[in-house]
Amino acid sequence: MTGSAMLAAQANGFLSPSGVEIAFLLVGIATLGAAVVTVTTKQLVHAALWLVLALGGLAVEYLLLTAEFIAWVQVLIYVGSVVVLLLFGLMLTKAPIGRSPDADSANRWPAIGVAVAAAAALVWVVVDAFRTTWIDLRGAPQGSTKVSGEILFRHWVLPFEALSVLLLAALVGAIVLSRRKKEER
Amino acid sequence: MSDILDVVLRLAAVFAVFLVLPLAIGQTEHKVMAHMQGRLGPMYAGGFHGWAQLVADGVKFAQKEDVVPAGADRRIFQLAPAVALLPYLLVLVAIPIGPGNAVGQFIDAGIFFVLAVMGVGVLGSLMAGWASANKFSLLGGLRTAAQLMAYELPMLLAAASVAMAAGTVSLPGIVDAFHWWWVPWQIVGALVFFTAGLAELQRPPFDMPVADSEIIFGAYTEYTGLRFAMFLLSEYAGIVVLCGLTTVLFLGGWHGPFGADGLGWLWTLLKTAVLAFVVIWLRVTYPRLREDQLQKLAWTVLIPLALAQIALTGVVKVVTQ
Image 1 (spheres, rainbow over the protein chains, first blue to last red):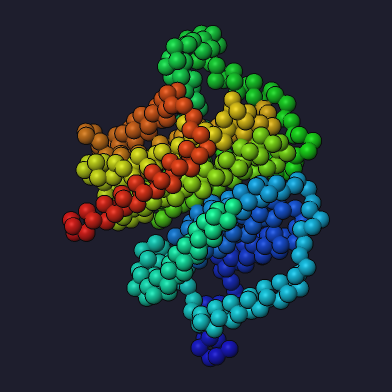
Image 2 (cartoon, one colour):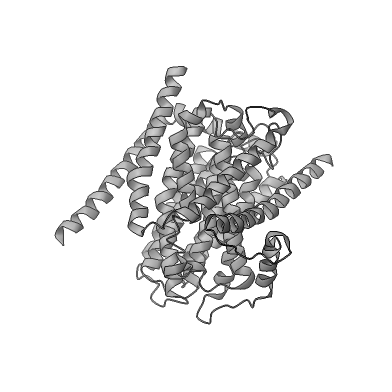
């Protein structure tokens, strides 16, 4: 840890956390628990519902960091749409009630390896980028819709546009794939 | 200390609204449907026009046995009605009914909060549909999911159009920015929002997922007693929320031609009530749409209309600035 980081930590009380920080940690632990159950449970639909808890926990974390807009969008997109899509797929394939003994993958160990590597990379990037940045939770909200919008469209326009092009490509790709199947029939 | 009292009072008021308005709409639906279809309906309970029928229905629901099918996923089956009902209580907290501070809780990104939490309510129907271990319920759940995915997008786009017009995403802010000429300007968005909302609530003519004459109430087939009553209540609470939201977003909430000072909340309630009447009216007059017609309406009519509305809003916004 560099000197400035130590200073920042001391100024903000690294060992005497505030109530929000404690809540953040507790919600984080609950979210992690829900996420672990999601990937270990043998009941398919239960896994999807535990995923709702994990994603909702993330939304609460955003709220605790005053990023209200991001939190609601997280609920809207992930809980309201992605999980509904998941459940739709599970119902279409008639997911059984009770345990599915075949709900396991032979790729378990490679999957764990990839997950750990991805988590390590993300944590490293975040820690390296925001090491000395502290969010002052007592002042004006720093994650309000206005602030988020200004930062997004002034400083991060290029990544934002690149992402939307990527999503558009995925959309077009999905349409192309589903059309080709029809012609083969 | 007064802060805490303020919060408690506000939450109590929201809870009272949550308990009273859906029941009032349920009662109105009984009576309006009876009149429109030229039939009497239950007229004896309580004397005048059978006013106590709703109370009697409530007592009946409370007395019925709470049955969980043997093959069902017990815990999810029992949890589903709560998941369906509670989001509407949360949404009511954010809807402003009068100028100034007359809102349960001011939320910065109000539109997104409201739409996000309303979407969560549908999870209750999906859980019920899957956990009942019943073919009809599963079909109902499938149709619910398909309908939600089709109609969530036009609803969001229509709401985004108003947010663009007002330059804010907070609900009180949008009503504050309202002028009368917004009604003709945003009328297409309003129709799209209201229609998509009806579909999300699975109200006729979009009641394919519950179609009682065909798949026997879909996801709710296996429910009895109080749990079934909670699903019914969530439908009525959904009507309150949808009509309140349409009022706030598109019809100017507490703004009215006269008496806007002090009596603004009355305008909000009046507009909401008229919209709720329209919802009931549609149930009596329109035949049910088929599943393919439902999907076609959403993807080929509502979404293009909503996009056109956004384009119009953008053009007017740029020209008038």
